[in-house]
Length: 91
Length: 540
Image (cartoon, each protein chain N blue to C red):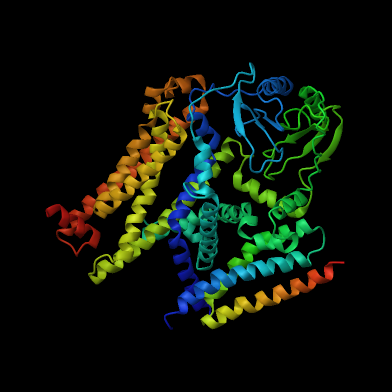
């Protein structure tokens, strides 16, 4: 394992995990029916759980590259889906 | 994969637990004290009369209105908090000049009133239990945002440490009953497991809900994505979630204000007696005066109160808001309510304190376990403690025992600082941190094995002597509070005595262990490095 593997994973967990927690929560809030404030609250409540799961993923996979891909790819997918939903949602 | 997974989670558990473990210990100690915040407030203001139960809400409100009419005419907002329970033991009022919904430029000052005479109650200036309680998410001396984020990151680490701790665990239930004392590392592991497993549901709840308290601070982008990123967005979101009825602007034409006890009478008819917690009066003496009657947020574990909005001139009920409006808000309010435990009576309150103390023990034993494990490994290899290990050893002493010494010093300061000292409350807090800094310095300069014992003895004395200090500096000594049934004072004194005895017995047990260990060393294998170090320094 090279020397940068641990710092790289720490960054993937802290920043990549944070990004995924945000985009995942925004997707959830955009997808949920009902009032906007309620949907945003569910998103906020879920965000810490998504963050926790993301950090555990980052440190459990075999390589730092997979760790980064594992947070960034779903992060982008969630962000893109949320964006599409929110565009469609505005009249 | 499972072997690798468990191993990586064990690694994550170790490091998320260690890195901010001392911050977490501070948060858990001050947070646990927060469950007795108003009791500590009362002990720290011994001039105040013993709080009594409110006889009649209507008469009490008349007293408060009379006071505010004389002392805060023309203010934009009056707030009257009724003496309902341990959460608010005294009648208190505050008023704001300027804009009624707070924000910069507001002037808020809470005054405690005698509910019978309406006289303002005067007592020494102190941060009280409230300051200790607020430290558990704001820390101290730091800008609020820095304190909140530091605690937030530490709490996220805690959540990770808890969940990875569960994952790496093989036999959760047998650990519940396993304790092998006197076996060094193994005993600390047993202690860490037992304290964690017993209180696991509490620790999960308190950690997750701690994040939920400040979720819009930690995750502002989720709100911004829907509400925009300007300053008002967060407030719009909060009001949207609470679906609070909009309040009108003042009409700027004077009008008389209805006696507030009329409004209380109407609210009591709707809710029953004893359900009213506070009155919030907006623009008194304006034609658009509004009186908001708030129910108690401590009526149950859901931290939400119903409210009634009245026209302050005609007394007409304008709006009624239920405590529970949506599933999402109720879920959040339940998490916040469980965290704060405002609803808890004496038995549940003590269970909260006990769970909090188990949390402190879980964190403390984890920090010690990290240290003992590495110290034993070093001793086996014949090496001495490396800088990282030394740092952890010193930080452990300075925090695990040094912080409690600092808090004891805070109580001593409360009794010994002159009553008329300027910025007295600030100095009480300074004493806490000065004493703590002294303990940190002591932990650095003294040999490790000595530093533990000395600080433990000091903590024991500092707490056990508090009832005596109280007896010497106030009229409300333990014998009197026991005889008169003053349970706040008796409870505080007895608890401090018990805490002192606990620290002293740990100190005593440690001293006995060290003597036995030293005696065995003469004929036995090489001792751990810290004992060698101590003895070398003694003979030098």
